[in-house]
Length: 88
Image (cartoon, rainbow, N blue to C red; front, side, top):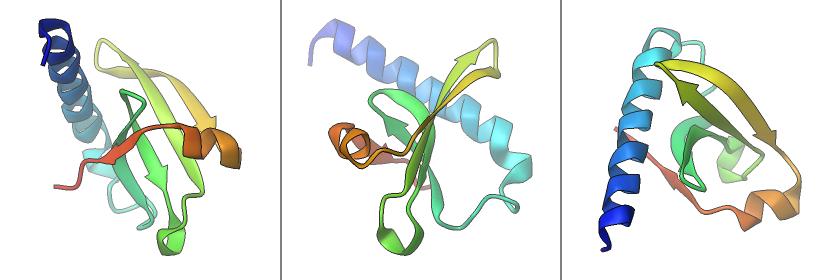
C-alpha cells in the first residue's frame, strides 16, 4: 500500500471513530436498517432495510462536527459507490 493510501485510510478510520462518538447517544433512535459505513472514502450511514440498499448518507466532518450531509438515493449512484460497513 502506498504511503498516501495508508494516510487516507488512517484519516478515514479516524473520521469513522468521530462519527461513532457523535452518534453514540442517538444509536437507539437510529433505524435498525442503518449501519455506519465508509462510502467512497467518506464516513456515512448506509440504509438497507431487509438487506436492500435504499439510501447512503455521506457526512463531511470538521472539528468533530458534521458540516454537510449528502443523501444519495438514485439507484445508479448507489451502485456506483464503494461501500464498506463498520460493524462493531
